[in-house]
Image (cartoon, rainbow, N blue to C red):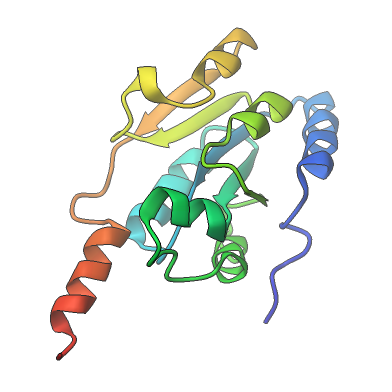
Amino acid sequence: MTVDVGKLRTLHELVAIVRQRRTLGERAVFTNGCFDLLHRGHTRLLQQAKALGDLLIVGLNSDASVRLLKGPSRPVLLQDERAELLSALTSVDYVVIFEETDPSRIIAALEPDVLVKGADWAMKDVVGRETVERCGGLVVTIPLVEGCSTSRIVRRILELTPP
């Protein structure tokens, strides 16, 4: 199985799509992350994000940016695998892979109507908040699912693996 090329897009393509969908009165929602070892915390966040607008765009950190953020042993799943998993979710309309450690360039280009992050982010620290608010959009934080984190899953696997 390959990534749904209809969902995996370039930033240039997404700018045109968002522009066209806005002419129809639709609202674009954006969120981003590493999404390494997809878990129910991720899927719930994405479902709730989708409910805030008409199309949900997920910015996916590239393998190189995940290594910079999480260390040399990550990601566990490579970007093509992560993009395919995200593309399989009905809540996700589009996926864009980015090389930077933060999505500010994507947010500036898309100017989403709603920017979503997990509630572990302080509002003042949400990358792109000022851009979205300056354009009249909303920034929303969604509560985390307790106990759900990729780092926790990796630690558990390592604990269960015999030496």
